[in-house]
Image 1 (cartoon, rainbow, N blue to C red):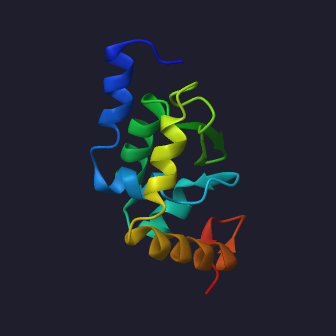
Image 2: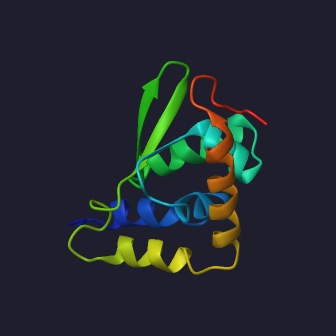
Length: 122
């Protein structure tokens, strides 16, 4: 359980940006590559990476390097452990108007993605 004001402020501050909220509203199954988020949210690589670093530093995601790309996994089981607040926030985000559009965009992109080059094949 998070037991300091500083840690709680850091976690909640990560929610203070629309792009980070859109990232957190995406499906939580498995890992997403930076390129997946770039394509889904129409972001340049530097912007996507900056927001993901912020989410990683605040405890919302963890990252793993595979070749030249970073892959991120959502940490829903440790954010606000014991309070359920992290899960409630993520559930709420999925109900917002933009979330289904972004989720559909991600699904469409993943159907066309070449896993070797991290690019759409169409």
